[in-house]
Image (cartoon, rainbow, N blue to C red):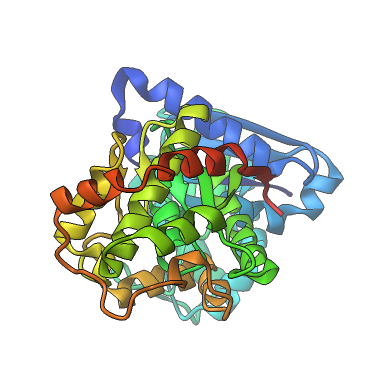
Length: 395
């Protein structure tokens, strides 16, 4: 019995004349995630992507392929289906064999049939009724429940073949990376920025991770933690360029020369944004992504965010801006980054933090103080030039 994965498009189907470019990006991503899992044929027809194993290695890795495909943005839902000929005998035989475990354990079911091939002699409703009766004759304990069944038996009669499966499961949704462009991601060791990365990748954005480290104030475990977070994101984002910016000298300079220490956090954030912009220009990024949430901490008030944005010219995308911490944590748990994010290795954002940071900083005062720091621009340029590059890939 031949089994395949069927992946269904969501909003991509509404892209009109641009749809083909989205489909090409999605197919490219799927072929990439299936590398190393055997030989697979991947093609699309009628807003459905057929992912078919073509050798024994692929067949043996079907479970892993399924898990990888579930994390590909652009796929609204998926199903694991058995393929058969388009006649009632083969459909019936395949259904009873392929879905035997589910039919044996369920108490209620319904049959949903879709007939894309109009030459098939039965229409969708007739096919569903016919197969429902056959199932009941083999499993008399089952009851039909069309509203909340434990098992949904689906039969899709399409151009090439018929497909039998136990309903669709939710996919990652969104749009395929990199159909929405490229942006720099300020990635810290906290909970929020990995969630922001996931949310923007879901909208088809390709990311370049930028992390600031301040040894000896931050240790190798803190850096390893952030690298682990980057690795955990790659099943969703694809290969993730990663820049580690050595920030010690710049941060010490801010600490030692800043006239108003309650402005330290916002001045540091502005400095980081300028360095990130330099890296973004190198990487052809068109925006910056941060994990900031409005009023979560002192540096995330409206006034502080306005001061931060004014430091550079790229648009700043903040997908977590309207979320509370519980919502962010829920996503972090779902995407697998939470347990790593809470490891007790702090990054440079938490060092030198004043006891009472300014919550309503004035941009004019910020710019005036920066004018009094003649070495700041040089240190920022040196930090950007010394950034260490690595490419994080799917495990």
